[in-house]
Length: 113
Image 1 (tube, rainbow, N blue to C red):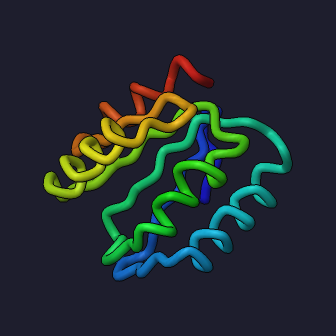
Image 2: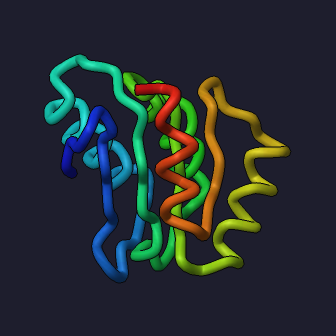
């Protein structure tokens, strides 16, 4: 995690496997880092190898606390397509989009700083 120019940047390590318990741990660490401040978040999910449904539901519902807007980035186009489909069928309470272009993902967050 890194805070730059009012945006919180979060990158998953390579071969990350996310289940509900690991998702809860990640959110807990992010909340400690943020110290109750609300930020737009750039999340690089390129390193996520697998994600179970319970982790996905937790991250997109309980896990969005203190997030003003969320930009999900992956250099794998299929991941973005699957994510976009998920958001269309399961909308979340904050502005959120998937991107395969890093600069577009950051530009999306700038109005929320």
